[in-house]
Image 1 (cartoon, rainbow, N blue to C red):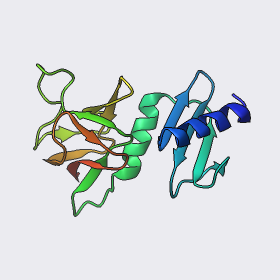
Image 2 (image 1 turned 135 degrees about the horizontal axis):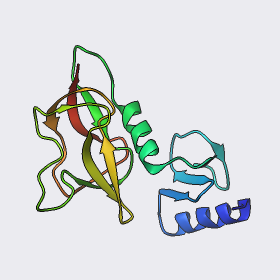
Image 3 (image 1 turned 90 degrees about the horizontal axis):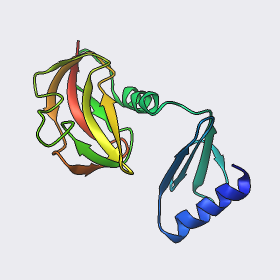
Image 4 (image 1 turned 60 degrees about the vertical axis):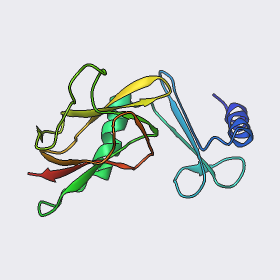
Length: 155
């Protein structure tokens, strides 16, 4: 992918009022985000950041974002936050039970929910050891990047 392709994507984002775009192929990943904040190099119009990096497995990306959002203070509950925009699901299918309930003990590899983004189901892991104290989002509701999904008491 060259800069011409990236500029074309930015133009499409502006034209269609899209605020975030991510493309991942075998050996690279491009993430475009319009609006305030964000690191990366600025390309095209001001307010659009472009981050290019070697490919990261989707589960690693989700885990990184969740761990960045979870605080580890032993005295208070912390949040497991959404690593992406999408639709929140508490179970793998409508007829299955929830991944976790209030009072469930979790470890860093415990899947706590799924977030569907662009028809892809992304398993979200706790990334901390602790006990779920509160579910903050209703099943099948949209979530934003960084939105708290669960309260967890680390242990």
